[in-house]
Image (cartoon, rainbow, N blue to C red; front, side, top):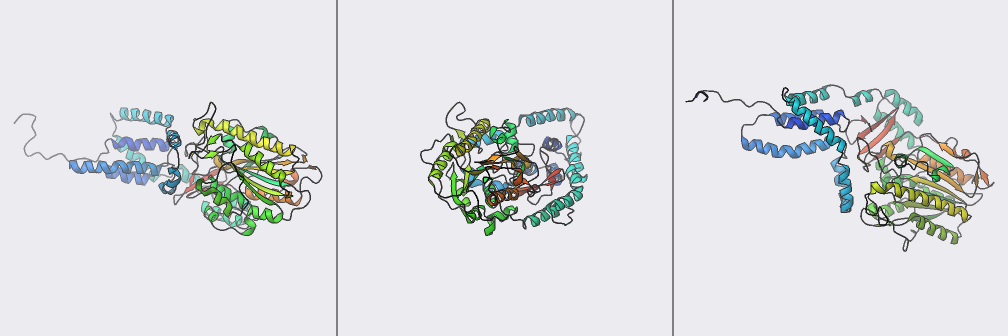
Length: 533
């Protein structure tokens, strides 16, 4: 027996608890959580770490554990991230299947954040250096324990929302005392369920009401591409600066606008039948306005046209055959030129003998995934061409208002976006992702322009927190007292005492509400957390 051989009766070494290379996985997640890039579920991660650290002497069992641990680690990372719940992705699998290869590649590229990659690379190097004198597994577990046992920043923020919630209840006019975010939310919806705006019979000078419903344009988007002072906005008679569209997807946003006369319902209630007094276009029709319907697309995606029909918009759809097609959608569907589509409607309106009409026009020229078919930007990603497409759309809408004036029409034009494009994204949502209906996505530039009458006093800027009930009240006031009877009107007469609406916006599975200075996010059954963009 050599000097280096162990004694025959030596006890075999007992495998010790160790995370090994998995330490870097947990350290990386702690680093991302520290930067606010993910929301770490400490207890779940501790349980996973414990399973990984348990010593297993059998090589085959170790390999089996590794084979199971890799997909589990990916799933846990997804759970920790701010990405939508997998159930939401699965529910939208039919829509995703319609995406073109180019758009899927563009979406995939948005998940690559070079700053995050650099952060993780630096963290890895520092961990390797520290690993020469520290047990990284123990450091990772200690970090998870601290996060599990100590109150986090979000908990601390939520613990101070009692007075904010009470104030929110007072603003909503409920008179109730709310001490938690859930109670404040319940008070909000209770108050909204009692709100409604009556429309009287139209009288005085006949005019048209034109709603231009724009997909994917928020104040944040316009600021990102330096279009927030476009001439269309400068020439408006009324501009809403804090209008909440309350949804970040087209279908729910269309329903909310087309049910504008009533208070804000919960997301789930949007797909239930609405009371007669809540359907905007039937209400306007009873007031004396014939219905008109136009879009710059065929409305097939997500069954959008049928959704609009179910809200009581029963007018024939303006035909688009022969109009220019400057863009293709992410499913290669044609997207027609807004200027040409609106010009066709105006030509049709000139032949129409109805004294009053209400037009619903929907445009998807700014939709994510669109591709220009000609010019120097043809084929480029939708993010790269957003500025050009937005400028063209705003020019077209401005030109349409000018054409109405030149044709001698009397009209109230309302530009109201569905939601933003999330052009810049933030730490909790990548660019283009709108699963969380945050202020940067749902605070949209709503403008009102009266054509055929001269405004006095300049543009009125509405800076209160508003939503669809305020817009309904304004339109109802113009129906009752047309701003054309004297040839001049004061915009401020129609914006006085508009109803204020606290910020609450939601999609299926997630909701954002403002309490005091914080925006709180709730995803499914998860606890409330402060949304930190």
